Length: 518
Ligand code: SF4
Image (tube, rainbow, N blue to C red; front, side, top):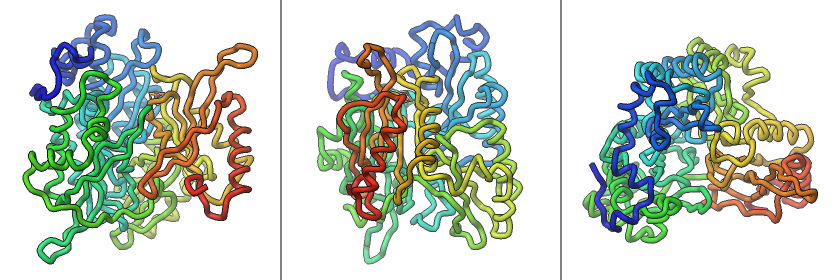
């Protein structure tokens, strides 16, 4: 379905909009088998951007014809068969690289067009798909990685996420949105799904209706990062669990039909919400949904930033979930196969991805915890008690594969965290997020210390990789983005500079004070 044009005449549309109107992005799925037979050279250059609708980006340099593929994993929950299928795709086609993203999805690299149909077939067999992973479409829905087993959730949101995700995936009524569109649905009271930085999020709430306490959701809209970040605003509605899909469809319809399509850098839902305000947006929403009760009481407490290290009790008596560290979210195919084996041997075989790029193994009976933790892979590589900076480091893909990147990130962030672990310590967790450009795949703005890559000319006129440093980001206390410190730092001396900064912070602060409080 073409969107309803409430706002402009067609001549003013940006080039991407014209291309999307000419042919729906999801149609690329129909072309891929032919391109796979004919080879990369047969793909017209102007078609390259449309591959995003199939979860595919060309790696740098684009002309070499290698693709990055992102696979949707709603709420980050993978069953055993899915985890094994993904690991084998990585092993057979992706040079063994398996990345967990900040939206709980999985990314592969080094794929050739000839291999894509077989990969799609393998994904389909286990109920996975790449549709919705990239492009101007409803993206992978993030959620509580502990959905269904979480003592800190007000309800199991996995079935709701699944219902909403399946409605939008492959749905041509919603595959031409003005820009990417990110949703989160979580009932974890520690804001595990980072509600405030999503276009649309559902957060746990309670409301007394007809004398009865009803558990449901509050709705936030218009959050997002990148060069102009916004925190989502709360609408004055209370939503029952069975109404989540209807409200999600209504908000997405508003975005599709009223969202901006002239300047691409002003097309995200956050700009429409900033212009309208929460009150007008609520009024418009009610035109689509009919009356909804007003807000109740939000149940979110302090933010856990998506970290779940250690062994913890589940809702279900006698069962535990175990959270461990995956440095900067990068694993090998063999490691994923080993984790799946261990998860199956001691539990139910599930693997759960966190937006902190770490992994949880759920459903481990009390009597198996000790044996599981004695497995070799948890001794050094994936620790449940990782060193402080390695524990809280996040990184985007960076220049290794990303066409938009200005600097290298992933391996640099891993080494930087190791350096800090060797040279400095502090009494609060310091979350470090590194990004290779102003786009925020590594969520730089919400970090205690955000590191954003840039190029810099040195005194002797050389261009070098450098970083801007931002401090004090959080989603606690209603959320606040970090602030830029003056200047930029040559990447060569980033470690020692951060060591000095953290030492200064440690010496000046009160006990337990974070960068946000400082
Ligand atoms: Fe690429 Fe920039 Fe995203 Fe990093 S933040 S993956 S460099 S687009």
